[in-house]
Amino acid sequence: MEAQLVRSEHPADFPYLPPVPSSRYTDPGFAQLEHDGLWMKNWLLAGHISELPEAGSYFLFQQLDQSVIISRAKDGAIRAFHNSCRHRGSALLLEQKGKAMRFVCPYHAWGYSLEGELKSVPDLHDFTCLNKADNGLKSVRCEINRGMIFINFDEAAEPLDDFLAPQSAQKEGYPIENMVVKDRLLVEMDCNWKLALHNFLEIYHVATVHAKTLAPYLNSQSFVIALFANGHMRFATRKKKGDSIFDQQLYKPDNVADVFSECTIALPTFPNTFFALDPGGFSLQSFWPAGPDKSIMEVRLMGWDVDTEADAQHWQAMNGIVRNILSEDLCLFRSIQRSLTQGTIPHLTFGYQERALYWFEEELDRRIGITSIPESQRVTQVLSEQMVR
Ligand code: FES
Ligand SMILES: [Fe+2]
Image (cartoon, rainbow, N blue to C red; front, side, top):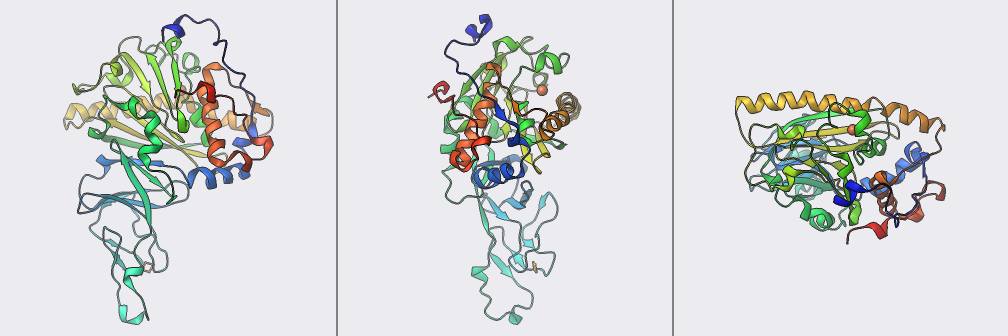
């Protein structure tokens, strides 16, 4: 960080970052490669354990054209199932979240246990050879790390903890598992999901876009990036006033390590999640595609488990502050997409301060399989030497 504060150029050993082809953000064929090679094979953030407070609590994961039930069973275990009845495919649950001790299909009332077993079929005698044991709900892999719930549509994927391991030490001293979701917002965006994510992987834009809102809190010059295996990263930025917008909380637990007060520690988690751990709480953001040029930002405001009127007011105010800061970024996204879609800008250009964006794009190609991507759409692999091992 000290070296960052006094540097006047990029490090001498930093490689040239080749141009990144614009068609990665516009081509339906590239979106299909991402669907098959990324979304259907990677660990994806679905939510937080605090969203399932008791047996029967559930919420739905409804991104990527999927509908998945994430629920807590009587034994306390959290499981995930496709939200599809085994009879003729109707969704079982229609509300985004709620409580159900049994999943009863709204079409013909087949009933399933919280463990996914088919328990009841009206007029069972009219079905020849229906074996209930063979008609349980289709499960989806679901694992938890530090209170964060992830799902994976690939049965053969590596364990979640192994996937997150290169970044895990960075969360020590911050009890994410004790937090609660204070609010959840969905923001529709007129751009490719990767363009929206890029915006959170650099602070080069903070001095211009957030001159009044974020710039006063961050010493942008001190920004350091660690690139980890599996596409994960860690950003650290010294705080200017000893405070970030999330530090103005009334309550802060005393078991948060000092480093989180001194610096804003942000942990981009591959492929699509970003959060910065401040002692007062944080905004947990995930970016999802909704077509090649449309995307959704899912935001969870994470705070501490205190139930006071002052705390409720604080988070209500935070909702407005976060929306305001996001709107400063969002108003430019549509114009970026237009420049790429119309072919005005054939490629994107990344500098040293934008190396995290390039690392993300490199990892995306490695996940899809470099040789599966048309040569004209690949990024050149150049940053592995810069990775923290
Ligand atoms: S589709 Fe669910 S009971 Fe018929
Ligand atoms: Fe921003």
